[in-house]
Length: 168
Image (tube, rainbow, N blue to C red; front, side, top):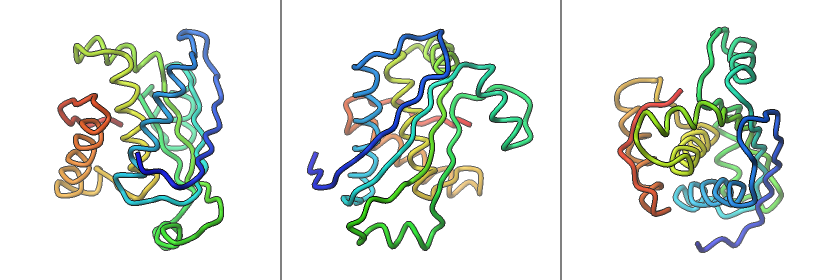
């Protein structure tokens, strides 16, 4: 990585189903850094990552999206499009937003897609980071394809290449 910037990631664990290891935190950091590098962001950023379980993410999903079911990852961007453009040249610390990952769902999906928990968790983080940076696969087919391509490229750069797929 060619990271010149400082990156702060705030971790919070609200679940007890999956052990939070140093290795898992470093994987999340790598996914955040690789996404920022890929998108050309090299200034100081803050990201919050909350680990939860299916019940916890169901509550977030119901409260913020009015969908009463668990999902794998939720993104809460703090910047609008104009703010994101300013971040490309701003040398001050910029808070991008919050990522909430259901590690329980990540384990389930890793089994379902026949790959590792680490690979699934990294994918969910990359997916969420792209949302924080303004991409949205739910806007249409073209946006979905562009986001899938970026996810695939970033995962390949990380050495965790997976076929792009849709995630909530």
